[in-house]
Image (cartoon, helix red, strand yellow):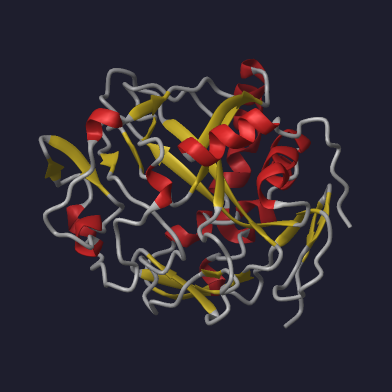
Length: 315
């Protein structure tokens, strides 16, 4: 069992705000100067993807971009990050005491990069080549999706591509994840929508719209400016996007997203490989991480969290 500190539990007012708006924060986690030093220290580990659970050796086909997924399974700082009480206490306030971290991703944005298009994710089947849901909630659940904790490892400003949210939009899905999106790497940084350079890493979310004539009401959008070392919490079903990197600064914007679900949620229940962005990698070395409470359901492989690394599950 993973014990909560309860020091950072959300108040009833914060919980109400989260359920109303679909997001909460930003919250302070690391001092700015500490975050910058940590990023310098771990950068060699991040560049070396040979220890990633989706390394080239695990690749089934196509792109090796997946090697930068789930780096909390081989980079000590990220292993500790996903279990920080400042994060876990707040997430458990929303999901209940028994919580898994099932996925992490880096989101770099370089000078001149397009913005990320408006999107929502419920079961995350939308970019999977197999079209299988990546997470499955019990049938009697009131909602789906995942809680995402997006941490700014560098400055996130409007100029360099910070997140945007449409408050309250998490209550209904505007996209049908059973539809197919076609991966086209040639479209990256080559698409304009309403005069703004926006895409989705080679996909076009308009292919999933329930109503082809619908478009998000961007007049309601709010930008999430964060300093290095802060994080924000949001439902994956919240309409979210990011600004383009204007190139006004030569510094990359780097976000790190950790995704959490209750232990009753099934993770990759129909898949033995992770299929995204034109590539695939085996899930043989993958496992979820119990960050709070205990696992009473035993639906998923769970990797023991230690300070110096992880013990991978045997299938």
